Length: 103
Image (cartoon, rainbow, N blue to C red; front, side):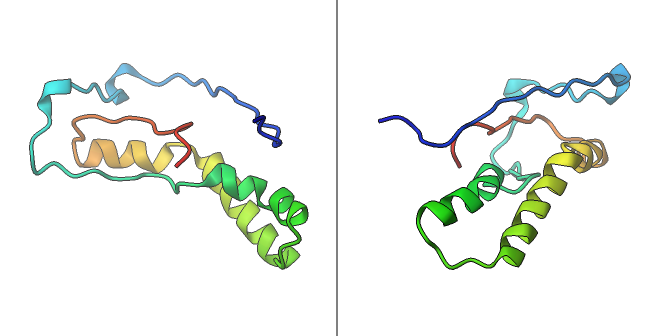
């Protein structure tokens, strides 16, 4: 089976002072550590919703579709800015990226 939706990957690169890099140590986690999702899950789905809606004749208003798309674009535009600030404020021990896992 072939995925009928066109998918594009991308890369964003930036530079920051080394003092802003959070270095994780894999064995530094403890049982009561918290897991925090810093971005909404489903941004790709949000961006594909208009195609899905037209392919399956779903009754979704253009206003709602535009709101969903604009929220997804805003989220992607901010990337990790808020997460990075929280990392430093709460002295985060480590992080991972779940992009591409289809959540």
